[in-house]
Length: 137
Image: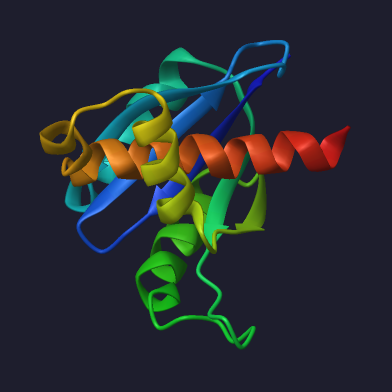
């Protein structure tokens, strides 16, 4: 039984979240510099069994795919070529950053800590993963 790995893929950073082996909870794992995400993924998959990769899909308010997709597509091609046995699913990532900020405020995080963009990206990945898990129920 494999885990589900989720990415909030950005030009500079990638927020990473993962489920427990039973796929019940979504947990923030880390934030990785985009230049190093392929090595991180390869190392992680060497240690953990991954059943599915969830990648946020940047959709604009008018339902058009955002320009940010051009940074994600080369990664997805690499992943499909290297791990054809692992399913990839896309989840609409609109509002995840706003939801992450709201969660940080509600969690009592101080203003300086909320400015940490890496933390926002990691929480956004958790929100993307929670959305996916909610769809599967």
